[in-house]
Length: 305
Image (cartoon, rainbow, N blue to C red; front, side, top):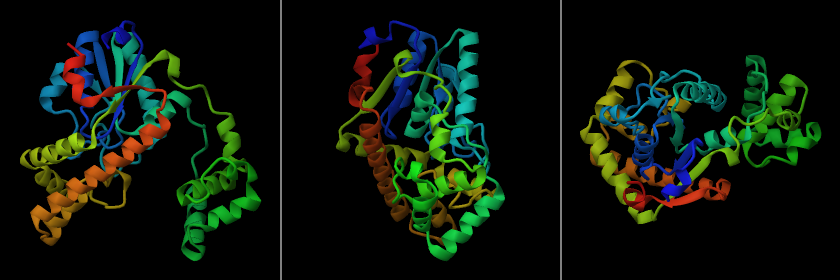
């Protein structure tokens, strides 16, 4: 396996939560003078150190890390923001003579990195408010009906049963007067091409991964996950539906803190939610990362010496 790393191409490591991405990334960074760049949508948040399974203090000292814990909960941070940040980090790595190693479980980040993102203008509050009114009065499925007459181009490209996609398409054409399909056709070149990187997808046995998930959550509890949630509450940062508050286990632990839910039940539910999330990740990776090099996660220890 080590033969594939005998160049200086950036390394991309995708895998489900608890599959051992950090372990592999650190080994590679130490061996090939690398810097680990975060590609996980929750590990960017400063206040979710434990529940997001962000690299701990010991791991951070083993090699350079970037884009971890640099955004406060509640702040706006989209995949587009990450793409701009990661471009800066890649340039910095080049200037510092370090090999970029991007790792995480957010498949969309990798997809945008390798395919680019349409430079669509920011949607105004006025248009968002109009969209909210449509949802409230007609239902989320109304956008797909409107788009059939308004934007035939995008109808052919998106899942019209997905209300998030149809609302986005409606907002774009309403804001700009131009179809999202046209914006997509004008997408700038990707930051990294598939041929100019080493894309790795960690695969693993379901039972093996579920056992790791359960053990890791127990360790999170011992390391202060409940206290972390209390701190988020004290700071007034908790907003259940905000993207930054989607750390798995946070909802259950905060309900325990606020409502007195049984802690054992909360922990078990958090473990179940994590397993379900890992399943969704693996399904996404199988669908979108068919050309990526697959590595058996349970054999990482033996693959890199």
